[in-house]
Amino acid sequence: MTVLAEQIHLQEQPSLPASPRTVEESGLHLFFLVELTAKILFLRGRLKLSELAHCLRLPASVVDGVLRHMRTERLCEVPHRGNTDGDIHYNLTDTGRTRASEFLQKSQYAGPAPVSLNAYIHQVRRQAISGMGVTLGDLDTAFEGLVVRQHLREQLGAAMNSGRALFLYGPAGSGKTFLAEQMLRLLSGCIAVPHAICVDDSVIQVFDPIVHKPIAQEASAQHAFYRERYLDERWVVCSRPVSLCGGELTLDNLNLYFDPTTRFYQAPPHVKANNGLFIIDDLGRQVVSPQQLMNRWIVPMDRGHDYQALHNGYKFAIPFDVILVFSTNMTPRDIADEAFLRRIGYKIHVGPLDEAEYRRIFQAVCDEKGVPYSDAAFEYLVREHHHKENRPLLACYPRDIIGQIRDFAMFRQATPELTNKSLDWAWRNYFATA
Image (cartoon, rainbow, N blue to C red; front, side, top):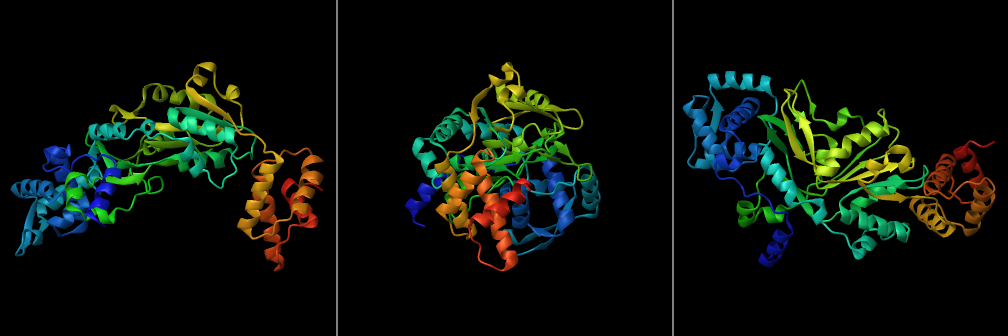
């Protein structure tokens, strides 16, 4: 990579906190870092300074300060010293092992050093979703090849720019969930996500490989200027996240989860989705009522922060910087009152397709599943089944019907064909008609 290319790449990175040079600059208490370092040495055995720094995701200068204190307190020792500072090994003393065992009973977290709550709040604000911006060109590029009506595209583009919550509503099978998931195509730029945050000396794990997709930066990571000035390695540079919850969502899921075995916390899904999208699919199918779920969001939507509590009762505010997307088969008025609906920026109806749109989806699914498309067979399906049985042209049907035709052909070890007979067979199976 050329110097110019590296400079361009650096400019595209989110503005990361500067890498700390001292324990004080890390935002963590010395005793917290002593506990964390002791637990890592207890679990992994003898380590070099560079290996400990990698485990903690902290610069060697910070870790060296922690180790000096531990040696003063006779918690660790140097069993081997090579010719260079990088070849110094550290091990726990008997006293250190006893203390580390006590630390592990308090909390079994032994991963990368967390960042402070204040640092997290500051970083989320710097990379707010409202600062992203979506243009018509961005939307056309993102949805290229997808069958999405122009008025829906325009509504979604405006909704993304608003940064406010939105409803996608319409009949089951109209493509609401698909449309909600495709909104990730409109997310641009990258953000910094901490491995964990520290609140009142408790660890809350935030980074989730299912939600957060790291951006490869091997080349730029080799650049000393980038590492020194930009990369506090307690943060992971990721694409903007998308978190999706469905019928399994409960009110308890929206609070910190404390694991009584490991004795540290997992962040709730909307915190993991900060600076991105949080999609609640199938609203109305949850165990709790839609009204209870709606009421849970009033304060976060109004004030841009949520309140969480540790199991010891300590309460704190945490940023709520997400575009909240509700997908439901119900109409908005059946779900929430006017006071809540005023807080929803956009209510977007997703309904049946017209015949031309339905045909385009049908052709695309045929290509995907290797079933030769036939105009005559398609027109037969619309005329003899949809029209006669008064079934709307919904986006979900082509994939399900053509999938059955392909499945039956594989069973018979035959080439799948789109014929009147195969369509009749698939339709009967799908709609349970005689």
